[in-house]
Image (cartoon, rainbow over all chains, first blue to last red; front, side):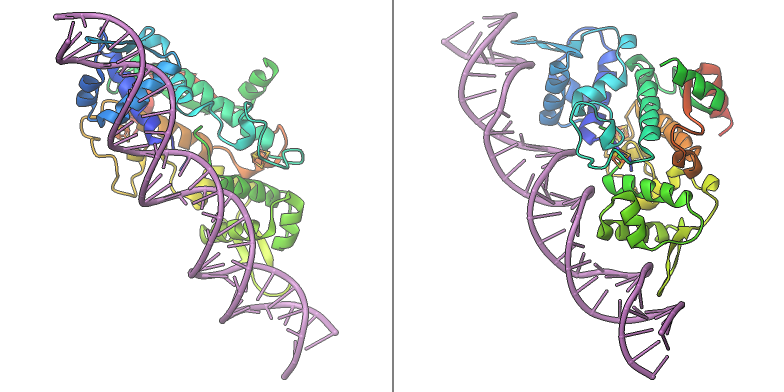
Amino acid sequence: MLRISKLTDYGVVLASHLATLDGPRSVRELAEDTAVPQPTAAKVLKALAKGGLVTSTRGARGGYALSAAPADISIAQVITALEGPIAVTECTDETTDDGCSHEEHCGVRGNWQRINGAVQTALEAISLADMAHRAGGALITLSLSAADANARLRSH
Amino acid sequence: MLRISKLTDYGVVLASHLATLDGPRSVRELAEDTAVPQPTAAKVLKALAKGGLVTSTRGARGGYALSAAPADISIAQVITALEGPIAVTECTDETTDDGCSHEEHCGVRGNWQRINGAVQTALEAISLADMAHRAGGALITLSLSAADANARLRSH
DNA sequence: AAAAATCGGACCTGGCTGGTCCTCTTTCTG
DNA sequence: CAGAAAGAGGACCAGCCAGGTCCGATTTTT
Ligand code: SF4
Ligand code: SF4
């Protein structure tokens, strides 16, 4: 299924909604607007705050707000904040020194890492501003071109 | 993490390895070559067979072989066979009539579906032949272009 | 002082993933 | 024909983690 977790999805929803606002809002308000259960929304927002994507103000009249302009926050950041670095396969996760035993004699590994890179690049290119606008903004298109591929490789 | 399951990964490894061979091989042989534990490899190959990606011959001297040319099998097919249709979010899975309650008033849904489509297209474009060759074949490149995006949308 | 919020956890539970094993059936081979 | 080799088709289990709830402490406003 290649699915992102539901919590992450909520994170994107919450963040995108925040992108349409200016000032900080309380969890209750945000939860109501997005139809996400309050406790869950709170958990997600806490994680986003820990990731530095949103800023929180405590106390009465406190709440959450984006820490940067909507166009400057990518959904890749949201995903990373909620569920760690993007890694399609186990071996593409550089943080944990792996669990995949073979990795040495695995022929497909290199290609997976390139796929992973492509996905990551794509998600990094999509901003909250893009997501906030219905049917708006940039869309990923994928082209398959050996020339481009090699160019990309050489440039790294 | 956005990760594919380990079983699926093994499926890709096994299928890619099969792509480098011509005749059918037994599970034992394939497991040894790829360093995948035999019982697990058997399970994976059974799933691939059910998905029609590999053909099996029973009895002594039996085994598994690809059911088509390596260039004609995409890793998207492998993933689909192992873990169902590609669905980045819950609402992009058309088979199950959803679990995501809101979906109605969810502003980001449309964009997710486009992302999903892009990922799917990308994975469909990568063949086993590509994966089998180390550092070989086509690579996905991503371009962000509103014009292309709209063109793609209109064409659907 | 009281109310409104977030912070930082702990906590639980169900489902799923990874992995094993066993029994049947089919086919080849001697 | 008999036995060995190999896949088909499940059942089965342990561990993990996602999803979700809740509570006490802290901070700020009123
Ligand atoms: S090394 Fe190979 S088998 Fe291991 S996670 Fe990477 S692609 Fe999968
Ligand atoms: S409808 Fe919205 S909240 Fe539900 S799965 Fe799709 S993107 Fe996520």
